Amino acid sequence: MLRFCTEKEVYPMPKWLIPDNVVTPQQAAEAVGYSQQYVCRLASQGRIAGRKVGSLWLIDLDSLRAHKAQADADGTAKFGRRYDDATD
Image (cartoon, rainbow, N blue to C red; front, side, top):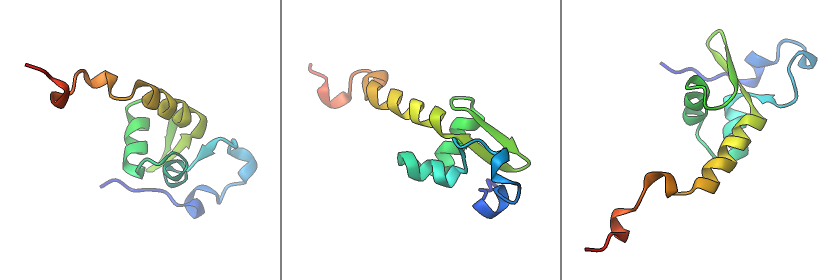
């Protein structure tokens, strides 16, 4: 079962040890409008920068924002022609 970290679990260590752009999956998801599951999947697939510490993910927010910008720029072009747009 996928487990998400909370701020209390990530930040018992001094905040100065964690870079400013590293956030929890929940914070990352809220920042770009994705679900926590999708953010963790992107990190586990290596599509964004992230590190798993034990069972908890730490996400590089700059990397996620760059991924989102590229996905928005690509739009539906990566899926090819839509069925609705097809002409016979």
